[in-house]
Length: 182
Length: 182
DNA sequence: CCGAACATGTAAGCCGTTACATGATTTA
DNA sequence: TAAATCATGTAACGGCTTACATGTTCGG
Image (cartoon, rainbow over all chains, first blue to last red):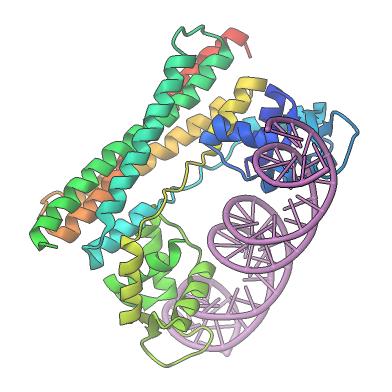
């Protein structure tokens, strides 16, 4: 599970509270790993129990902001986890299941939904490219910047792939629609 | 959730038992959606309760093979689900989290693990291309074949992307290793 | 000082995973 | 007929999601 380590990474970049983490997840790390606020709060508590992070102000209580920072043990754990050998999770794509279903019982309205997927992927692609232009145009080649850029490029590659694929799929399904005079 | 509909699709292609489904999942649909035998048995029971599938032989009992076929209600449900509008699940890639971590606390041994990822993706890519050569060389253009081919091509595109990305990442991380004389 | 937005928290349910158990079938 | 394998099943755990609850801060 990556969530605790994504949180450690975010907190190392800058200590902050649960709700701020949620916001940062929405904008950067969250492009490749999402978490709801409930997951984040639960996990922060667990990380604190493990002695990997600590609250900056001893102040407690419901509704009060509570910022955390990473302890040396947490840093060490993140280091261990990052270098560890791990199997890549196999693909799991619902759209492929639906295309297989379409092959057996179609045509259904699937092509319309793929068109909306295409629009969403185009949006994300535009967003990523905008970030790239804004943050990585000059290309001051530090280690940290190059790695962040690499992650962003992965996002761009993936979105480009799905844009390409959606168009292929629409081509096949639309042609089919004509044949069968839906 | 796609599992019940993946099962319906597989059972429409050919009625069979839970263990056979598990085997077929390992070889075709399973490239894009996996399930353990426990998930499959639990789900088959649920689908039977819902009246979407039915056992071919009334024969019951632990250890006895039990084949299922899809009922009209199940076919209708699959049709409904396939055409329904659905949000694409956002990306969730552990490797990206680890690259972000590497940017903050690296270098770690991450590059070695990416090398093994590369090998795995190359294997999968070779497998998919072999299947493509074997099953889609002639290209008799029926609807079903074109859609199946499309799904396989998605797999090839995805694996090609990750092969490409792993090589990029190794480039960045290896260069980094030299700088820091790990 | 009141309402809206913010920040944190509790609870329940579902899906996926793992470990293990047991009956049936095959094979030496 | 004993051992190995196959087919099905039970149970428990953990992560993710959703709904809801409660306290705090901020803007008018």
